[in-house]
Amino acid sequence: MNPTDYMGFGGMGWPVWSTGFLLILIWSLFWKGFALWYAAKRHEQWWFIAFLILNTAGILEIVYIFFIAKAPEFRKKLGLK
Image (cartoon, rainbow, N blue to C red):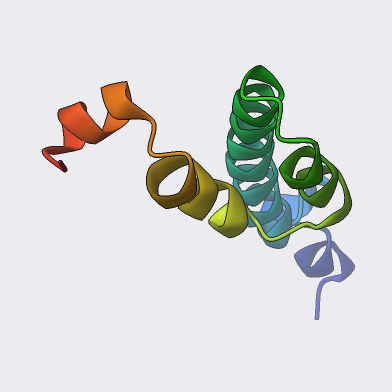
């Protein structure tokens, strides 16, 4: 058994799980930032606080943007009314 097998891609120091974690982090930060901006724009302080405290990998933020706040420009692009 080679000890470098546990160090990632050929011992390069980048574990396989790091790629998935990085993708989830980017996904979550994008939706969180957009939802925070939209809640602040609409003066909805309780939603803003909820987004700051809760980490749901973007799920709560997506529900807020598309179904609670009903962002019209995005709903048109998706074909929703």
